[in-house]
Image (cartoon, rainbow, N blue to C red; front, side, top):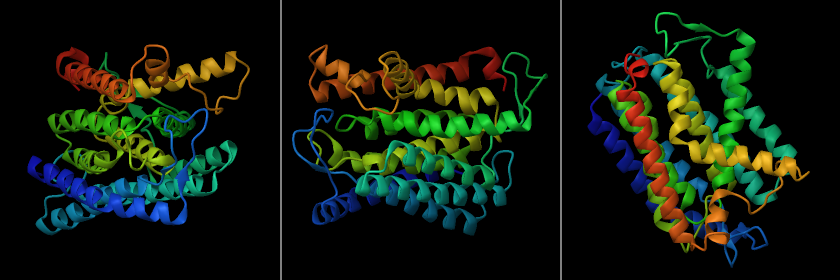
Length: 339
């Protein structure tokens, strides 16, 4: 599969999201799907909050377009360790699971689900995805001893996958607190992983990430501060789900260190921010899902005096640096380089 196909997918997703976002915004305004202002909100007026639909439309349309072209030309699945049938199976399953989690997010954006109900819905989607076949493999490569793989008991593999799904979706959701933050972070993180996957000879994974990056970039045009529309839970949960699933798919193609540990480096900021939030709220005797203004992006504004754009650009720079670190690790660290 040519890298030009990956680029074409990104452009199709970008153009689709760019075109559909104004219509999604109009829909939200007409039916009153607005994110209200409040003590924990960073915007001063209500904003449409179902922007995730536009990102999803760009993502799905680009992937279906690529799928049709690649199957017709016989290119899909010829590179890497899996066959064309498995590749199609993965893409269709990811889109299906992404649709389910998008519906959960839309329901929350419209009806405001309780934290317990939302967590249950996330767990249900994760369980369906696992039944479909998205599970961390039982045999994983040991980065320090490539010829001595690590064996995971089936229940350990299932628990790890379940925690991975819930952790990634909520970590991505938690960091969506400023105009343009999550959409830009998605573009940067996905771009870093695309380069790594292309280098490792896994264009199928890069194709999915390209669709996500393109959709997020097209949406960013309207999400940049001052945002005309925000992602909402529909977008945040969808993006988190895609990142989680792509990493699990990658685990069947390459070493565990590349497929799961590298995304943790690239997405270290939301992951660490979520971990600190859990510790902070637990020590304060609060529920871990209770929102506050203690996140990293909030501290940049309230403690260090940055404005929204400055804080977002600084976080972009951190994400770019993390992407470079991940790239250096996969190319320069001997145990990882040989995997």
